[in-house]
Image (cartoon, rainbow, N blue to C red; front, side, top):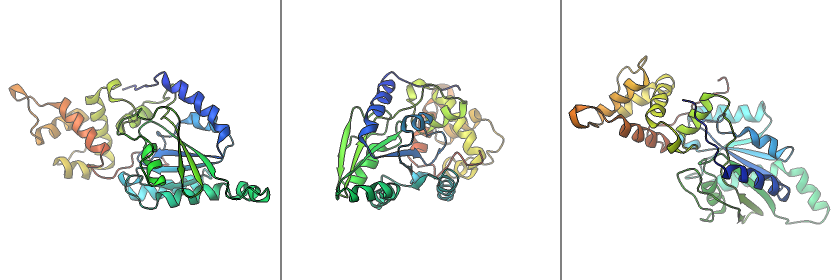
Length: 285
């Protein structure tokens, strides 16, 4: 499956981010902890240049806890990034952690502001990331109130939204942005698994088969526990999808299995964290 999705409004979003960058002190980039490689837009590096940056692996509550630690350590040590894993939906310390990381990354700049008498000057941060990575939910959590519009599908945020945080921090929410062409099939698949790409532009059954094969290889116990699939190793995705549908009693006329319905259920359960906590990418590949 060669998945590509770059609607016209994303070109406009990129231009807006480039224009707004001069009005902010730092960029807070959100990636998906389940796919830390695929969910980082390579264009962000080109857009942001030398602007200070904090990288947060969001949805850490749905990712493999051990891999969260591995990824944060790798990003901090190898890529020299100020990074942390966060849960924007339920994590109680998201706001405090974010403010701490931002202030640490801007320590030298804050010292210069003090020398100039700019004590109490609020820090302005732009929040960027791919669609459906949870930027608006993150902003609402940090602000402690529902200020930014959030949703479970890509493309909910439109236009510019500034949100003031009590701790001397102002956050600029931006619409999710992808890049014009995914260079490899895996990136497109991973983004589609997590809902960063609209389902309407994908083959849901093919997507579900690819996800089942990935879970079969990385987390076979999850398929056994959730769908009662014994010995899934070596079985192709389409066969696993049929077996899941039968286990769930999803039959249509003539006794055929409703794989289309099962594909939708599988993706919903994966995205909602009902299958378990998975990280689909590792630093080693």
